[in-house]
Structures are given as C-alpha cells and as structure tokens.
Length: 140
Image 1 (cartoon, rainbow, N blue to C red):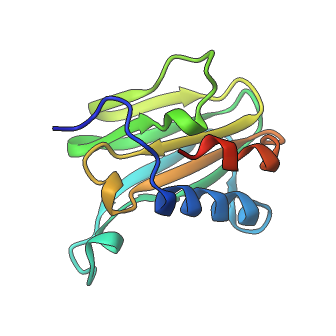
Image 2: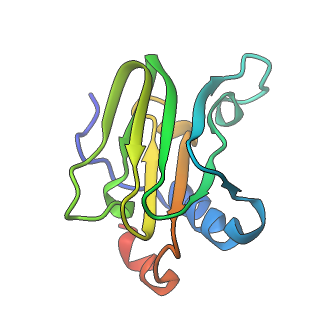
C-alpha cells in the first residue's frame, strides 16, 4: 500500500538537487511545454525503464506544462518536500493530458506514484527557482 505523503528518499532528493544544480544548462524552456511519461521496454534496468521526459523543465512564473499519458500505472503527484505549502497538492491519474500552472517562482517536484521508487521523478524550476541553501532542510 502506498503512503499518501511519501518520504523523499535521499536518492530521489539527490536526483532533484543535481537537476537544480544543472538547470542552467540542461533545462528545457518554452511556453506550453509537455512532459511525457515513458515506459521504455528496451531499458536494461528498472531505474531507466520508467521516466518523465524531460525530467527537468524550466518555465517562467505564470507558464504551464501539459503532463501527458497519466494512464494505467503512470501518475503525476507533487512531492511534498518540493511543493509550496500554500498550494494544493497535484494528483493526476487516468488522464491523457492534464495542465499544471506555475504561478510563482520556486522548485516543484513531481513523482509517479507507482514508479517513483525506480527514479521516475522530475523537477520544474519556475522563474528564479528558490534558495538552494534551503534544499537540504526539505529532505527527511
């Protein structure tokens, strides 16, 4: 049974922190982007089989992202440690497409409820993001 507020494992947190550190170079930036949920049957390990593509996205505050293919076992859930406390958590299931708006600067973490344990996590950096020195305190 899955916990409704899962702990962010150190491995997943490290993936997100690395993404934050690299976002200046590798993040995708464009209005009305989409993020697909992939099951790659040619992968040689479960940690590469399930993923968001791209897994790091940079948007301006006020922009949106369309999450595609939240069907079957794939879902999109906000990661509490990387989600503004004043916003309602995101829970997307059984939708071909769902749009999420990023109204303010910050880091927004997402995971697939079922495949997050295999590293199916992603990060959205909206606007200027946030303070990197606060990130270690967000990891349990």
